Length: 274
Image 1: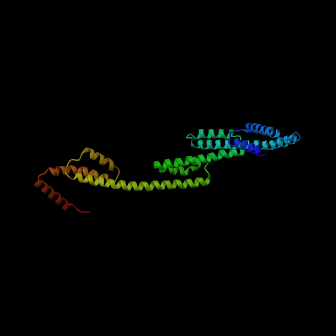
Image 2 (image 1 turned 90 degrees about the vertical axis):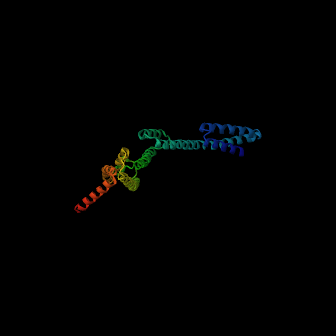
Image 3 (image 1 turned 45 degrees about the vertical axis):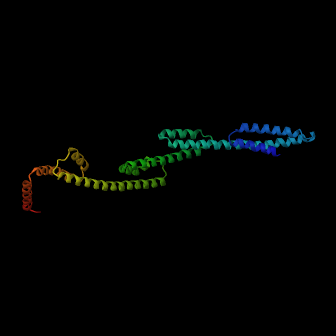
């Protein structure tokens, strides 16, 4: 009847949600069936009780037959859900060797996986871990602007990430090349900006040097450090030397300054031009 159907449905639902395991589900269904049988049989004539009991027991056995496969499927889903969580967790563990060992142990203990599925699962984990590590390494090297390391990674990708699929490696190499291009473009922009700043710095320094006032040692040292190794270094060095002459010129009287200018003009006019 409807009450018995409700009892079977209730048992299955509690089995699916994990409230019951197989044993508890069978015991619960047995108890509910006995209670219903007792309730119905008390209202039947004696000559119909035997027939009722027969069909009642058969119905119980048919319902009970669904419990074992349903319990197995419920357990399998629960195990797989836990297994997926472990999989994702191990992919995030920093130490790859420890993560791989933990995952392999979990795979070995998983009762619902076939030998073929265990092998495939480990291969897929290696591939995913290679991909995860590759993304992290690429981001790190690009952040460090290490073009040499990026090129070395591209050349040796088969060794660095041996489990990566061929098509994934090809895509990864393209990503490495793109990262190198971004770095080079960024460095080009930075160098142009830096050159503008140094050009202005040098121009200001030369102007200060020609004022005839002594240059502070801190300004000299900071400027020399900034332009060292650049095309502005010689210009700054010459300005430092000329600053001494400018200081001496400034100390002259107006008449002496005029004589000095005339003398320098004459010397320049008599200097052969190339």
